[in-house]
Image (cartoon, rainbow, N blue to C red; front, side, top):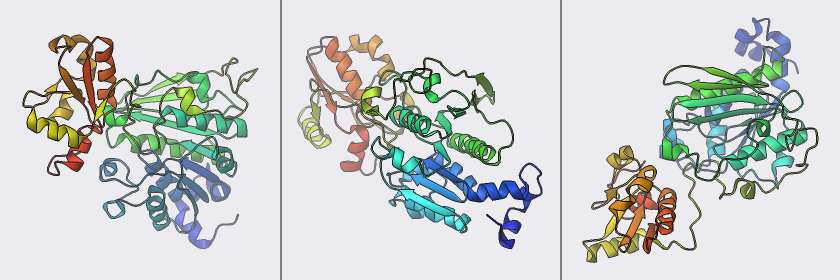
Length: 387
């Protein structure tokens, strides 16, 4: 592909660098990159790929822009709240660079559509926030021979690597099995510094550009850890696992599988940052409306809030008692096993875990507040702060 005079002017700071030059910029123009996720990581990633002149960018996400996204998802704005994230992102990218081609996929990334979508791209970038999609992204990239530029974030810590099974290890070489359900908290449970996805997503973008122009040393066989609170980056060397079930010497995974079943939990979808645990058939749930009526007639109602103290400081339901989920195993003795106990958290996932724990300890009447305090605020208390 040739560059127009306008493109030569736009990319002049690239062209005067011998590592990029005219040929490198032509490679960028002819390249295609699929961004899975248009959230915290996908925002800076897509912006910088568009600015760099990557000719074809695919954006996959099925969520809509929410007010709480704007703390970190800088591709979106107040004016696009309520819009599909893929539409909001496409609009912003074309404002930045109208010469590039943007393809959007407003759908879940699943075993049914992954091969068909990924086959049309040179490089895939994983900007997701759940294990089911990470394993799916890895496996489709291995099967199709595509590099997978990986990033993850939590609180103040980020990770970046490039998984390319033809030249090094894949994601399964590093993490052969997903962690037990509930062991790793989501960003909604633990939080994330809004700047961190900008740092990690930009590092992912730089890895993509290096792969396209064929310069530098990509993070193949290396995992970069970055703690922005202490600003202490660490590099971990990775080795290809000969026993890896998909890229090893005798692969047992030769086609895409059921990744929800593999991870043992309900899938956490793109944009759904507070993955709720599936309700247990043994734990009854009560709606916020039913709870409000019950609260009016029973002044002695026992409501246990299992969120963290800093969340409790943001908002709370009057009369609730704070026992964080991480302390429930030490403090359940404060509760009477014969009492009716209603458990509540942000969205209902952590309180369901607490209810299951108490049930195992012999508590006879535990109930989960469906939707948690967020649903209470949305439906019953519009003046309550939401987060």
